[in-house]
Image: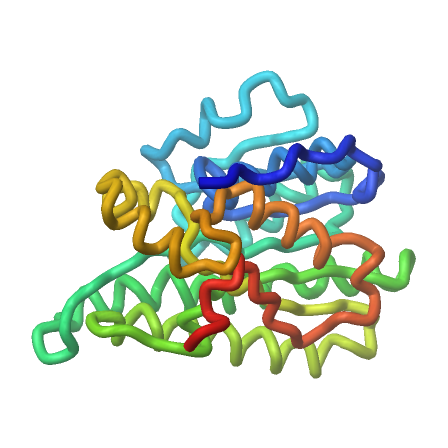
Length: 262
């Protein structure tokens, strides 16, 4: 199975910027927080209490960590306040990446699991966006730009058996992102969403530990490999950078060609 290409040298593409990254204890969030920091950003890395957030970014001076459940009632205000404190009163980038999965046939899905998926994947995304918008507007008034990126999934455009709640939640993330893009464009704030395919993260590690399952999903992709967190981090970096000034309301498919044949 081919490996990801060697990472290019950092270019300080986020120098002077302040970013929030949720779900940052592992996987896509961890890789993104560290890439943002390597590119010059001051980063608030957020994940739930009990996760590895306290140790995931040890030794990285540009990253401040916060143990916070994104679905808690007070989470949006706490996260934005912590970012402003870490960043000297400014906020340039919000990357809503925290998410949970759930797989069960619709007829046996429970209300509790449906609510859990939507509380993290959808409600928290919207509420953190809402809380961050004033700070993003204030910063955009100075710099001319602000960024919101939300993690959706290729399942925001497709579906599969057993994914009623998950797919519905990710379709909602796409809808939130497109609508906020329309509302915030006049302020210079872009809002986009990432559509990962089969990515080897903590969420998928159990399934992909089975070599046969991993091989099947790798074969489905045009690039003949599973995605890695750094692949997603590089995609998010594009949307977070100044190079994406004219990209908004867009779902960036980063799936190695997984969905080309469906």
